[in-house]
Image 1 (cartoon, rainbow, N blue to C red):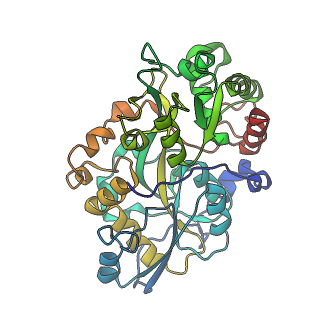
Image 2 (image 1 turned 30 degrees about the vertical axis):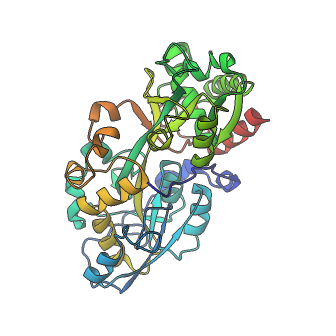
Length: 391
């Protein structure tokens, strides 16, 4: 893993977008721009891709890392790639209509659908789709009204990491960064994004059942207020919030941070001689991500776009891309091509493990947990709340 994303906030642009209209904008039958195609034609000769760093490597970063050149030779589709640093940036770029394919996290996918920027994807036209883990398919962040708006890529969990010398006894719960955070005042870290509110909601689900939280991305005003209160309390103990993995890695190695949220790949990179750390999936479960390859409703090269979706889902290619990035691949067959121990370390295919992960989703006014007697808070509300929390 050499390139890694920063998963930042969804910005103010979300405010203008009413995701309550999700179904209406999701691509009605007969809509030529957002509806799914039923057959493919000749490849157009080029495809423009918008993705996180490390997802579209052509050897220019490292000659040994290249899963683009072969695709170009095989399909005749010349790839132009642009990377982005935040989901908000990606959304604004996607709306330009200049990109055929977008790699989107769960805090972006529903916005793409709601804005009519994503086309329904006919997975029957993507042979490699069949091998993808079933537990990643037809999920609320990639499927709306039984219509697929993309195909699953890699995935991972937001874990709890701690210095084994400084944090004793070994924690098993997120309590270490909430109720017990004052024990390590100034040495606690947390992810810097409104989506981190969901981490607090996961904790509250387990420890304050009276709040009735069933889905950490589906919070009514009372539930959001409880999560905000918890995070405001935590704030006094936080030394720094992070979105740059290199900074949190360095902070653990210097001892400035001893406990907080992390990714498995960060734990792998930390020099154990400088800081003995462990990364665990706490008893309450965790949030996480499963990115989606989407096709723009404005794509000028839909055939090459479909060809890319099939290519990036090829087990050997998917293994390369997800291992380089630092996440679990999307199929058992991909694990056959991954380096020894990679899939075990990232729990690839471990469905029981995946069931403990609340994969990122976009909070919308229509409650994602199915409630219809209350309006839930949306990402605009979460963005405002995050500003209050950080002060």
